[in-house]
Length: 113
Image (cartoon, rainbow, N blue to C red; front, side):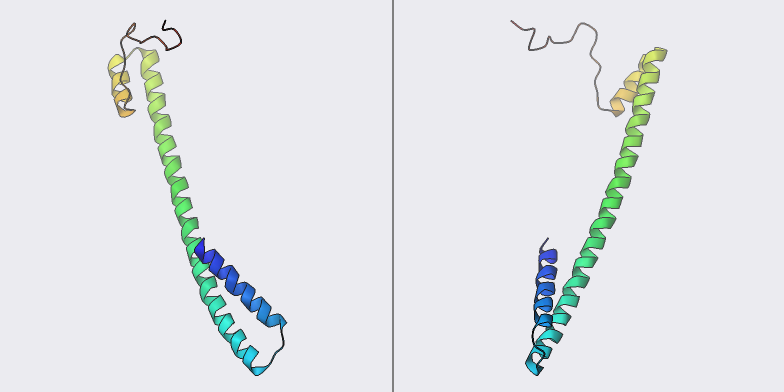
C-alpha cells in the first residue's frame, strides 16, 4: 500500500511539473521527477507481481486442500454405507473427528431444563 501511495505521489508530481512552464530549472526538476517516478513505478509493479504470484499459489493450495478433503469425505461416506467401521474410524481420524457411541450425545442446550 505504501508503494502504491509513493508511486501515485511521484506520478502526480511529474504530471504537475509537465503542465507548467518549461524553463531550465523546471526541466531539471522534471528530469528528477521522471527518475523518481520510474524508480517507484518499477518498485510498485514488482510488488504487485509478487502479490499476484502469491495469490496464485494460495489458490492452487486451496484447490489441493479441497480435493483432499473431498476425497476423505468420499471415503468416509463409502465406509459408512458399506458398514466398514474400521475404515470409517481410520478416515475420521484423518479428519481429526472422534466417533461417539450412539446414545452418548449430550442433549442440546435447548433441551436442557
